[in-house]
Image 1 (cartoon, rainbow, N blue to C red):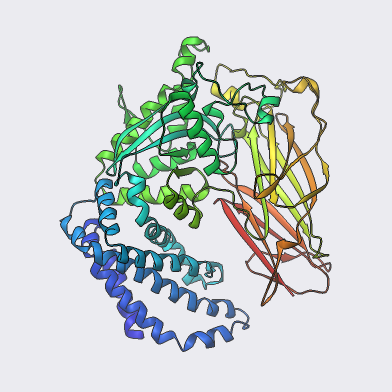
Image 2: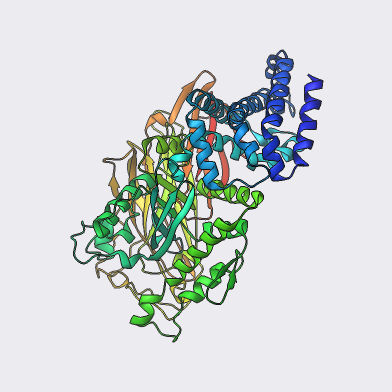
Length: 616
């Protein structure tokens, strides 16, 4: 076993010394050797696994010992999957002859692998197994040295794991089997909507054989067609914003991205008569992250350089009217900068031949999909099934336990979300496990400058900053498990003078539970400039949020962050029966008092955060 461990260490050192093109050439041999070493380590450690599991009670060392088996099994599954895949494509890799692979080459490669269905399925099966095993790996339990090594390589491990499972559907996404035309939704998360932000720009991305053959974005208002009859918009938009019809720029009402994507395709086809194959949506955070990986791009005609550090300010300045005042001429040209930037990024991608740059771009894509700043939908059931199984479809999936998601929709005709912070305090009372009760407090802070009155109407200022310095009119939705029952609410009222409809909002909460896998509570809130506001709800949860297991009773909570939000701070308090003993499944939980209350706090950066507490 020690011989295999030493051999694996030497392979890792050898791989790090290779440049990207040489690494691709040598990868099949290196991975095959790594697989042999991992399997040798596994067989050597097999008798140790039961001993390590039996010693998990040891203070300080029990939890690290429990991680030995899943870590080795994870390495075995990954190396087997990579080996099965690379052995099939070894000739293609050697044919590169030191050249950097292009996206078109990757699509052709995926197609060739698909022709060998048995190998593709076997490789994919190992990557799926690795994904399952990884759920039992807790880096926070590792000794510091192990944890450091894991964190240094976690991004590459994720790429291998997700990439292996995505490989069979890669041709469909990249247009390898047939050209793919995607509807592009450029969302402004400074004006928050359900899937990330107001759809400021709409465009087209065409992929053919892995190559970008068309990529352009224009003003979303330009898609409106006065000659068609649009459907009625969602009732809250019709009421609070006086929207008379449902146009493509307002398509993202549903927080479930696959649902929103299909609505966007429907409304775009109604407007243009053109049917698309899928949808790609992103916000400004993704643009900044992409340019950080890609490097600066040059914009014609002045060849001005735009990079991750100045792109946000460049967009603000490009939006501003040249004359200093907003008029009809400015209105027609105010978003031309989006097309210029899109073309510049397309040129940079097509001209890039650096393997390390492509790796960075791939990592950015994965990271932004995981955090809700980049989303993809394809009218292909196989692709969607893979995306959903990986948790990358940006869908709302409550799961079997407790579930909580805050969905905000800016109805103020402004960009106030740029200066608004939000946080949650979620208290769950499990004192009577048959009737669990939840209480949620949602707090908003508007950091806009004081002195601006709350006048609710569509009005552009002469600067983009003036759109940020506004009061915050927000239609909020709370998504909870199906069969949740609202008990009471405390929501501040809004006067008639502060609403476009000139009717007061009295703090009523609407409950909706039909045609969805969750229950939805919704209402309005107004957060004036330089101030805060909050609301609270109490509801009865279904008893199914507590699940029985061989080890006891499990309370699990799935927290989902709305796309477009950078991060969301959530404090969780769980009250258990005084007679039970609680075993937190993650670090960070603390017992509050003798009433058996436990408190934890998370800052959600990725889309999903799972928390579990075992009690018996």
